[in-house]
Image 1 (cartoon, rainbow, N blue to C red):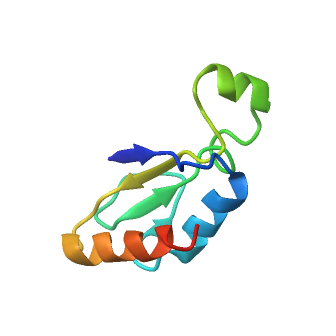
Image 2: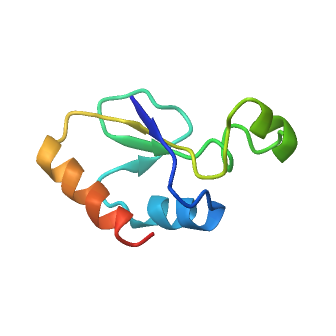
Image 3: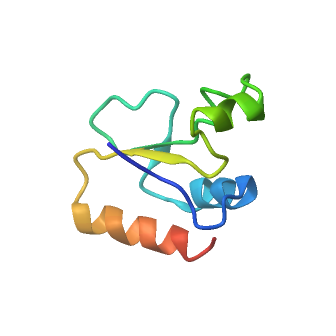
Length: 86
């Protein structure tokens, strides 16, 4: 598991990043053997008001990754190319 936020805490940039990855699959559950990406603000915690999310440190650009069995270099390249778009 890996969690990170973007320098510019932007919902739009987080969405762009998630749409730009090719090897990570978008998923609410982060279990499995494949690499997965999750955006809690728009997925698992979408029903919680922003003020409440911020109180617990859940910012708009938080991205969670679950690393699977794919080649680590392929995953790093995929993430790098997606980050260049934000």
